[in-house]
Length: 102
Picture 1 (cartoon, one colour):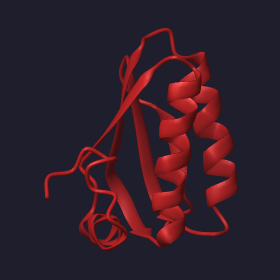
Picture 2 (cartoon, rainbow, N blue to C red):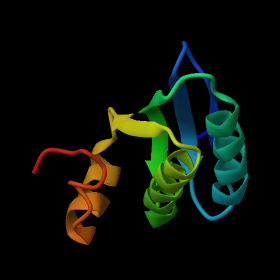
Picture 3 (tube, rainbow, N blue to C red):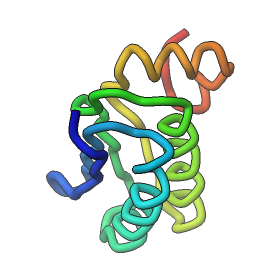
Picture 4 (tube, one colour):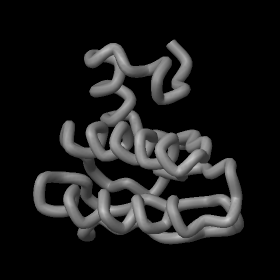
């Protein structure tokens, strides 16, 4: 499994990948905040298809990035959330906040 990364994809697209845990979370948060703040577009999509594994830290990261986007006056939507993260979101009651179907 690879260390977690977040990077710019296409215009308005952020790509999250690797392992999301207590080791990778703080750096991912900072990198994501910088990418969001530096984006010239107001609508961003965070693609999570390449996430290999996530603890609850991954869900906390998504919530923090949503707050960062809101603070920057931008909208962030999440797509292709892996099943393990969807399960954590479901148990936590956060599907609607993350834009996931029930």
